[in-house]
Length: 388
Image (cartoon, rainbow, N blue to C red; front, side, top):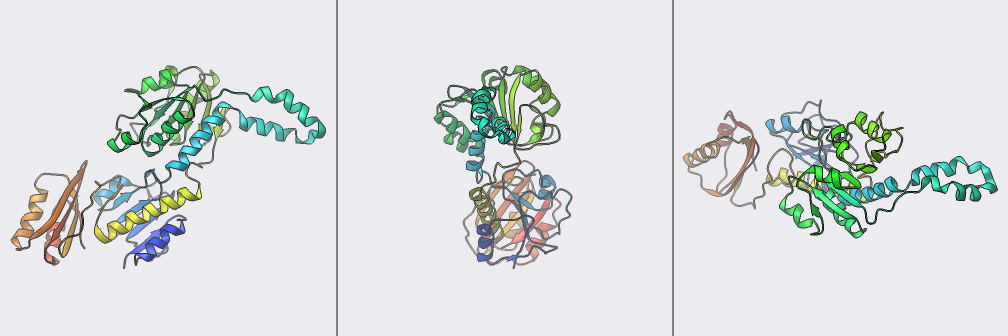
């Protein structure tokens, strides 16, 4: 029986699915076969050799050592889109708060709470200090058009905004989700140059998206731009941001990842990482993570992995070989030669790669003993072999 360990509180719906599949939930297990995680930092953890997969109940995987997991034969899953509705709603809220100083107004009203009967007159006199523009008729730039970005772009159109979208890695599926009214920005400078509001929905990648909003980027933006960052704090250079706020280049910055620089900065609204903090989102993420874990453990299928290709194959035959290996020439030939020499017929198979890592699934008409998997496992470019 597979042992599943959770490192954070996971919605009971996901845990129930694990239990119904016949697996044991054991949060004290020192050598689990699978781990379900939300935000716990796993980058310094040591994994037992039997660990098969890690499922992140959320989209970001910065808390997991993704690259090294692949070479240990550990599949890392995430749950893209499961919390998209929750994040979309908070982005809309953030745009409104970036426009109308509701937060400052509420704080001010609380500060005069002791004025008693004078409050109504004070409110009428002081309300002008918290005025701001409507979002209707303004232009929004959405950077990153995945599950979340596409929802935001479409919702902004419904609110009467003009929308530019920028995503050099836009998938066909994502493109189908987008309204035809979203304007295609072929470069990010178009977003900076054209938009009154900019919202970020890209992953944090060192050397790529690290501090993508810096002084050069701010200089290209409209004066008084309003920026929403519910993706990752490291996408924005704090020092350059504060300079842009001081110069009024940036009118308001809303972030879901506050830090020492932004927690008390002027014209900044720090939200305590609430993007996916809804019961519906937590349930969706937990269910998706649990389903992906069960599917992989039982049938070797991979969906929404960040370090291996997506592979799905209907079960045929009597035995299934699942092999994680380097994406180098002749690997598939080597596997097939071994199986052929054992006079075993192949019923079905699939092989896919993701960068330097490949995954092969082979169904055979007869049971495969321990000898063939053992020989495959000893090949220098093979990371893991399972027989199901």
